[in-house]
Image (cartoon, rainbow, N blue to C red; front, top):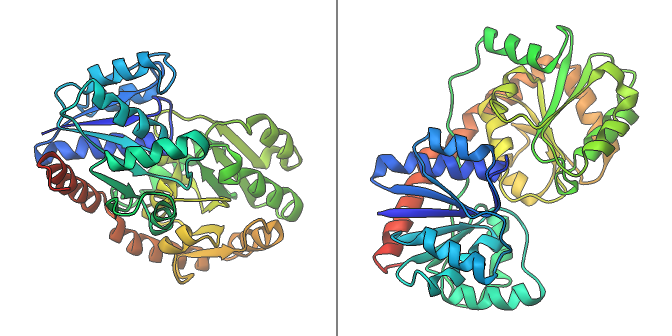
Length: 363
C-alpha cells in the first residue's frame, strides 16, 4: 500500500517532524510512504530521505491553482491513499483527484484553525469527498464537529512520540554547552515556532518582568518565526541570561536534555509535539490551562498550569520551580511515566489501520 503525505512545505516545524516520523515508522507495517510538499526544497527533505521516505517538492505554485493541482495529481499517481495534513493541503489533495481519481483522500488536523469564507464552503464539499477526517486531540475533534457536514467520519488519533532512553550526564553537559548555559543556570526553555499563537512573547515578558532578580533563571528559545526580532529586543534586559538560538535544523529535540523546565504558554493549542517530547525528556512543564494541554497534564502532577495570558502567574510558576529542584524532579518523573500513553507505536498502528480501511473503501 502506497501512502502519500501532503504537507505545506519542507521547512522545519513540529508538524513536519511528526509526519516524517509517521511515514518512516509505517514502513515496518508494509507501507510505502512518500512526502509531497508545496514550495521549494528545505531541510525536511534531508530528514525524510535519510529515513527512507522519498520526497516530491511541488515547487513555487499557488494552492488550488491549475498548476498546483496538476503537479500534485502527478505526484499522487500510483498512491492508494493521499494523507493530507491541515486544511490547505487537504483541499488541494481533494482537488487533485480530478487528475488522480483512484487515490483515496483523508486528512489530519493538527491545530485549531477552522476554515472561513470561500475555504469554508470548499471544505464542506471536500469533507464529502474524503474517506475520513482525523483530529490529533479532543479539542480539535470538537472544533471539527462544529463545521464539517453531518455524517462525515471524524476520528481521533493523538500525536505520539518515541520514548528515548533517559539522557545521560554527558548528553546534558553537551546540550547545555551548545546552548551556552553556565553550570549554575536553571534553564527554562521553549522549542517551536516563534509565532503569537505559541506565546513565546508571554514567556519573555514573564521572565523580564518577574525574574530579573533571580540570577539562576535563564531563558532558552529554540526556533524561528515572525516574532524573532521582537523577542530579541524584549529579552534584552536579561542580558547573558537570554539564549535565543534561532532555528536549529539538526538535533533540536536533543537540546531538551539541557533544560530544567519546559515552558509553552500557547494561546491556542491542538496537540503539541514539543510538549510530548519534553515529557519524554522527564521535564516539568509550565503551560496555560487550555483544554488540549489539560489532556496531557490533567491533574497538575506532571506540570504547573496557569491561566492564559497571565504573565504574573507564569512568572510565579517559573520562580517556584527554579527554586525547588525536588519539585522539578517529581514533576519530570511523573511526566515521563504519563507520556508512555502517547507513544509513536500506538499512533502509527492507528493510522495504518485507517489507511488500510480507506484503501479498501471501508472508511
